[in-house]
Image 1 (cartoon, rainbow, N blue to C red):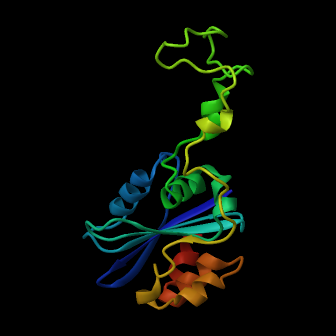
Image 2 (tube, rainbow, N blue to C red):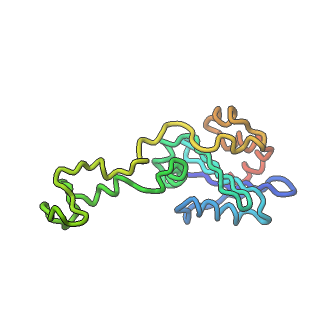
Image 3 (cartoon, rainbow, N blue to C red):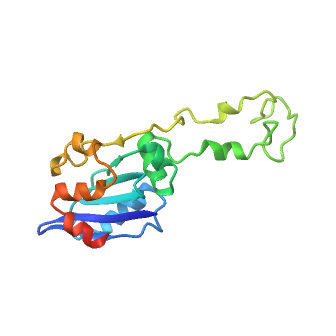
Length: 188
């Protein structure tokens, strides 16, 4: 189960709203969601948490590139929304090497392709082709632990050390450090 909320900084302080992630399929969707939550191009933090397994923060400000932090990349990569964030941070670009292998028969040929293609034909797969060659070079084991911008909240009162030390109630602790604990709890 996910919890997601927007925390927007305005001239009058912080405003929080819960949000639905049903239409989020990419980082661009996270950014659009954040910008819709801000009336005047103010800074918006998108908080997302999955049952104390991991949490993420996406920081969106005006026309700047979004900044992202994920508390545990390996745990997040196993969830649909976390996978979006970890793919962005780790440079996998959403490619799924396993899906690429799913279209192969056990003999290494693509579905519907002859077991013995013309050796000179473009795209011919050698029978002894190693399936690992099909895995993109940047794809590898997803690291356990935090990834992303560890300074994402430093200018707002939460140091890198404090961010890395957060436990199971991380989003509440972040909101408390920002002076927005009551506002976030109201939408939780």
